[in-house]
Each structure stands twice: as structure tokens, then as C-alpha cells.
Amino acid sequence: MTIEIELKFLLDPKQIDVITQQLTSYPHRYTSPTLLANHYYETADNQLRGWDMGLRVRGKDGHYEMTLKTAGQEIGGLHQRPEYNVALEDSRLNIGLLPDHVWPTGTDLSALQQHLTPLFNTDFTREKWVISYGKSEIEVALDQGSVSAGDQSTPLLELELELLQGTRADIFALANELVKNGGVRLGWQSKAARGYGLAQGSGLPIVEPLVQPSVEPKASCEQGLSTLLSGLIGRWQLLESHWMAGDKQIPTLLLQTLLAIRETFSLFGGLIPRSVSSEIRQQLLTLDQALQQKKPDASHLCFSTDWVLGQLKLIELVVEQQWRQSINARQLKRLESSFKRFCDVMLSRCAAELHDLAAETLIANQLSTTLLRLDKLTIAISLLSSAYPSDQVDEWLAPWLLARQHLVSGGQEVLRLPLPSRPLSPFWLTSNTAKDSLNH
Image 1 (cartoon, rainbow, N blue to C red):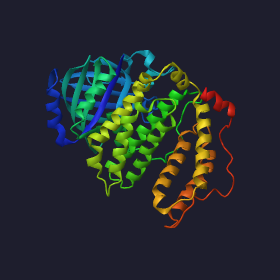
Image 2 (tube, rainbow, N blue to C red):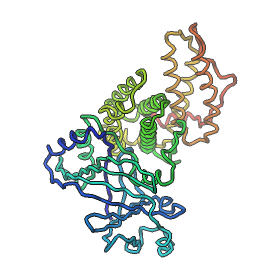
Image 3 (cartoon, rainbow, N blue to C red):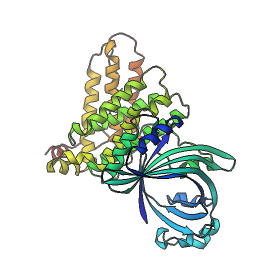
Image 4 (cartoon, helix red, strand yellow):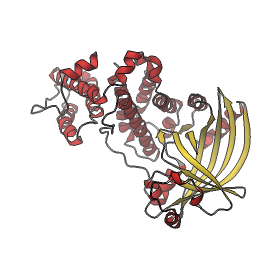
């Protein structure tokens, strides 16, 4: 078994020559293009998908290899998954050659083998550079071809950076250099995920409203921070894919998502130094301005250097837990404390700020500032509410979201944010004890 660690990018075809010239400027070993034919297998009821597994047979120059990839971690375009590779005598699938322990307890391998059939193919040429970078060896593969299922097909043009030996920091550093000329964007979907979508006609996952994240009940503040940011990275990239597919409503949702990322850093400002996120926050503001331009262009912005670097740096921050490099033992202890207790304290603060905002007399030319403050607070409450039933959270937020609509349509006179028509009881735990324990 090996643990595959790779960064995946999608390329603008016009960028191929630029990228290949960049790659040859590093110390490297080169492999000329080779044709790879891959057949992915599945059962009629998607049993492997249910186990978060991917199974393929790859053919190359008359030689065949079976690969099983099992459940791992994916954040943005960084994929980390255990994989098992077995040489085959011919192209026939034989799962009996894989180690027994890779399968769930009680799996009937004979029955599973009989039910596995080819679901989709990926056929592409692969050109490789094994680059010496920092203290690491990184394989960079340029894949050009297609993903096909039945009579359906979609082009494939990817750049994969796989860490052969060394540190993840080096793979991120190399990626940061390769994207500086633009024309690349992170690929959050694996080839297998794209194949499944094509075979089953499911397309991209639908875009859900920005709602409460799913955080483990006994999570620490650090785990909560990682979960929030990971979820928002995933949402950012899903929205990006829908925008690239032609959905014109996406820029508004992207603005909301980038604001949610910035607000996450603000919420945790007392636990991690602002310097840790300062560069990322500045990049997010730059992207915010670009998205607010009249008719922003998806291809131009999503393949831009600012866009991809913003995602890369955010992914690296989460994966490497870079905030740990800038905190002392006391701050670390606070990061390791209860996320739920932290959320309860912050929810009370956000609710108080909302009521303060509603008590202010507002001037029409300050409307955009007021709306931004209101959006930050309602987003913060959603982010902090993972421990509570969503219907309670939605019920509490609904009057404030309605008040926002009234404010937008209120004309150009002196305005006041309408207070909810009835007192709102907190759905969270309010406790001075919890607040005191967080501050000491």
C-alpha cells in the first residue's frame, strides 16, 4: 500500500506550452508521452462507491495493472488516498489478488467479482517530469485525452503533481510557482468522480444554500476551524465549476462564500494571529472586487493567478495547520478547547451585535455598509451553529433575513433595520461560566 498525495489542476489548452517550458527549467527526469487506457469497474448498485473505493485496470504498452483506491482525504485539489497496485498477466480484472484486509469485514469476494463490470473509461496520453524541488521529488504528469461512458464523452486535460518523496510543503511551493502565469485552476474532482458523473448522468452536485457545517460534537476549536474552512473551500470550487458551466447567478453566491471565509478568520481572531491569514484575506478582497465588476468573465477569473493562489494558500493553511507556527503554548491550549463552548460564546456576541445594529439610525448612503455588517453577522451565526438543529437556527435567522429584504427595498430616506416582531430566544447555550472559561 502507498499513500498517494497529489495536487490536481485543470489546464487551459493555450497554457500547455507555457507549462511545459516551466517544467523543463527545473532539474528533472523526463518521460515522453505514453498512452494509458483505463477501465473503471463498479457493481449495478454502486457498492464500491458506497465504500468510497475506486477500482481500475490500466493498460500501458501491453502491460496491465489493477489499482484499488480507498477512502482518504480531499481538500480542494489536494487528494490524499491509500492505493493498492497489483500487476496483472492480462487485462482481466482479478480482485482476489488484492490484500484481504482492504475489504469490509464479511465481503464475499467471489460474488463481488461476478457483479463488477466496466462502468467508464479514461484514455489519455501521459507526459511526465520527475522534478527535484527543495528536499523533495515531485512527479508532474500532463494528461491529455478523454473520459467516456457508453456514447458519452468529455475532454480531459489535467496537470497532476504527485509527491514521490519529501514534504507537502514542497509540492505546494512548486504549485505556487507553476500557477503564476495563469491558465490553470485546481481540479477538485478526480478522474473517477468525473467518470461516475458521466456514466450516471448526474453532472455536478447541486449548489445548496450556505448552511451550518457538519462538525463533530466533541471537536476542538482547531478541528472546528479546519472543518469550516475545508467546507468553504469545497463550496468555492463547486460554485466555480457551475460558473464555468454557464450558470450566470453564481457570482452572487461566490461573493457570499468568500465573505464567509473572511468571517471565519474574524471569528477565530482571538485564537490565531491575524498575520496567519493576512495574505489570504487580502487575496479574497481582490477577488471580491473582481466579482463585483459588471458581468465578470468566468474563464478569465477562474483561470487567473489571484484566484488559484487564493485557493492554494487556503488549502495549504488548513492541511499544514500553519497557524501552529505562530502561536504559543497558551494559545494552543485555547485552540484545543471545546469548539461548542467557543461557538456558544460567539453566538451570544453576534446576537448582541445584531440588536445593536437594529438600534442604529441609518443613512441611505451608508446602506451598503449596513448590509455588509448584517451579512457578516448572519453568516457568522450559521457557521457557529453546527451543534444545534437546523430548523431552530433557520427559525432564529428568518426575521433578520426578512429585515434585510425590507432594508434593501426601503427607499432613499433615513432607514432603520426593522427589529424582529417578537423577541428571539437563543437556541444556543448562554452561560457566563462558559464565557469566563474561554477568556481565562
